[in-house]
Length: 332
Image (cartoon, rainbow, N blue to C red; front, side, top):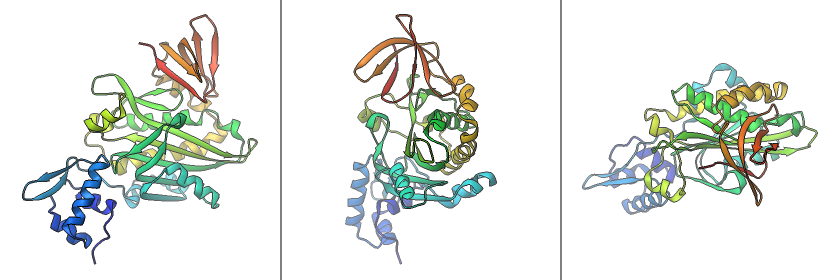
């Protein structure tokens, strides 16, 4: 009996990068070649490059490694497996963070990890959309319940950034961190560009306990058309590490995140402060600070033990930025 006709199943059949005829694809899924062609057009509209090879069939312009929950768990060290309650892998979600928030509402969520091949309504900081074509990013969210209140979670998103940087460094990749939630890497022109973003969402009592969902969106591959649509410099891991394995990277990130989460409530951000400052993208550099409609010119300092960024304004005053709706941009 053939598999059902879904974008995910079609992508898995094409994922090896080989040429597959429309007839082969149709037979595998129990549908006509015309139905296959319609799905291939959908993939093209989603930003997945499919090449037609005359007289032979179709192939992906760039092979994709589909997410494999069993392979990810197999790559996890024993400590991480102990901390992991459940690993969920989905073909498409509106948002992996929203999915785990619903899990918490159902009485689950703690120690759960959700990975998605694509998401249609992902959200970055300040409500920006984060749309991801199938299989070309690493989208994951981790749920964790903390007994302490919100103040015990100060700097958590920065600690997540440190974990991501530390894992990538084991691959020979050396990202920089931009306060408060971005991971940067030189793009193809050598300019620092966004590689990944972190979104931490907290629900519960200010005095505790509270439930936290940490979402990460990390660019693995991005073609020229996608970069043009985004309209700002972006970096992708495959540009600097073409041989990178997606499921292995997912396992490495999860191992680092779960280890950090298991100690964060006791140690706080202070244990991660020096590591963050060592990777600070804009330390000592002139920046533009935008807070609401108000902007000022300043020089970026270090982050403190609570994850706040200190800046020295051009008028000589020093002040502490505590997150929220604040944007930091390097001055040109």
